[in-house]
Image (tube, rainbow, N blue to C red; front, side, top):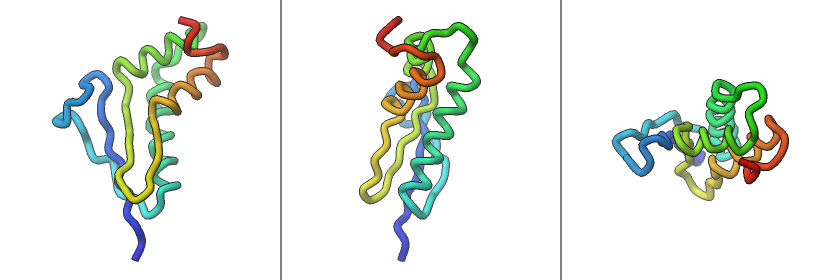
Length: 99
């Protein structure tokens, strides 16, 4: 029997509002669910990023109103905010601390 990992997406704009939560899908492995979560964060950052934007500005947009995916399942570990911080720094250069 395979384990089931479920990806849910919260909306940072409606932080802690479970009524704003959506179920994104079910996946057979933790790795597959993590890849889906990364793609969700990457999608938001790609549509939000503008030329000349600093890592701090982009991260600020993400935590204010980005898609915040998470995984429910045995041993699942993924932090959308940590991943978004890393991606903002990679996309824009610099540190998110440089606002």
